Image (tube, rainbow, N blue to C red; front, side, top):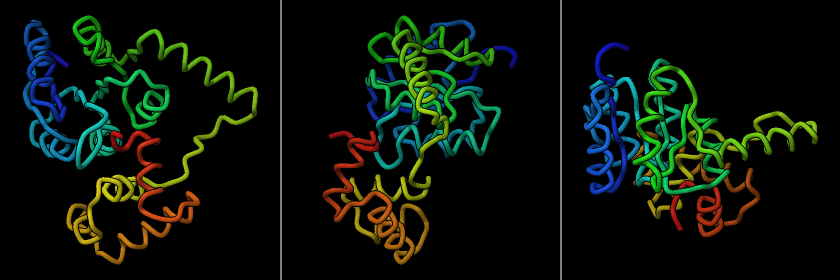
Length: 217
C-alpha cells in the first residue's frame, strides 16, 4: 500500500462516524473514503470503493459488523479489517478474530488507539488492547488444558443471519426479501436453529441472539 491508507468506516451512529472520521482524516497517512450505517451497506461500499482498510462497529442493524467482516474477508482477502466497539467483552473479541479482523479497538479509547491500530493493520500486524491480550492467553490455556482447540461453532453463517433478523422482529417474508432467499428456506433455517440450539420459539431465539452479541438488549 502506498500513499494514504484508504478507509471505509461503518457505524450506525452518525455522530460516532463524524468523530472517528475527524481523528483519521487528521493523520497524513490515513483518509476515510466511504461511510456506511450498517454491515450490508459496508459490503456494498467496499465493493465499490475498494478501500485498503475497513473499520466496522460490531453492533449494527440489518447486518452486524461481525457478519460483514466474515463476508468481506471472503470477498476481499487482501482487505484489512478492524472492529471498533464499545464492548470490552471476550465473546465479541473472539468472534471478531474468527470473523477475520486483525484488530479490536474500544470506542472509549479510540482517540488513543485507533490510529495506531490502523497503521498496525496496514503493516499486517494484529492490534489488541491489553485486556484482550490477557483474554486471548487465558482462553488458549484453558482450551489447551481441556484438550479442545477446535472452533466449537454450532450454527452456519446463513443461520446466524436468519437468527439476527428473527430476533430483530422481521417476518419470514421480510427475511426472505432481505437475504434474497425463499420463505420456505427461511423457515427451514429457523427450524434448524431451534433444533440445533435446543430452543422452543422466537422469544428464546431472541434471548440467544442477545447473549451471542447479534443484537443489543
